[in-house]
Length: 335
Image (cartoon, rainbow, N blue to C red; front, side, top):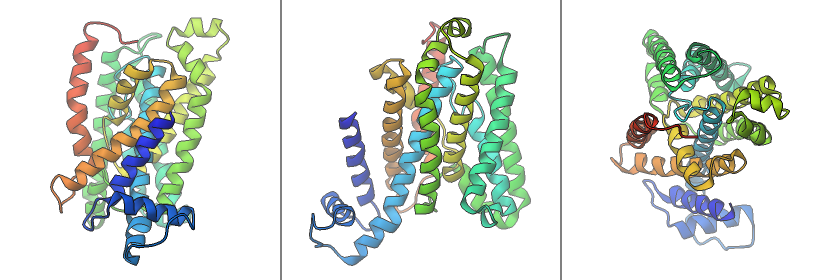
């Protein structure tokens, strides 16, 4: 775990150095040490570097990392909860519901009202909760949630939510560009206030998921067997759904719709750590952060100086992987 955290830190340092003004990774490291551990390194860089690193690039990189971690642990939790390897915040419509809630908040100007920076995350949470309830209810057949019905319900509800978002966007010409940029995914407005909000909600959601990792393992067997082993199935499922939905909604409210992170990363991690959520969730947290920071680097550099929407980059990696999983699902159960 310590090695994984070190790798993530190195990726972050490299990511902070990329941009219109290239800053060597060693200079970034020394600048951060001087900021957080005064006296460790003497300043030998232009003063403008401190503004670029501390006020512009570092909050964006941290925001990207937290978004990747949030989407990844949410995907891992949904997959275990629904016992379905294709359950992902984007594919099952949760992200689209969060996007609709956030779009409504932006369109109505709630983010500038009394609730301030928390208005968009709260509206996104409301939209995501409505989506997950609808998808889970429509996709459930008896006591099971088959892959086919879950995905079909997710696609239908997700499409409906996206259509409503588009309708709202077209109805508010003065903010259409802002909402469109939000729907495509990106971090143009990342700052320390956004980092504070997403860090708070992500840590709360992660703490709940980690505390319920063992009952979640038992739910992989069967709900009846889990009850016999002492698990309060209904309360555990409700707590996990709320935690995963809150985490997803907070990430979406700041990043826009970024698909496939919650699908690709948990599967890749599961190949190394196994299906035990006590290991899967912490590793998914780190791997999700690293994956999205690398995707953000590609988005910023592939067509520089133009910046690609981050959702396009993750779709290039996620869509082929999704098709691979669909093919594999025809042959055998994953868990």
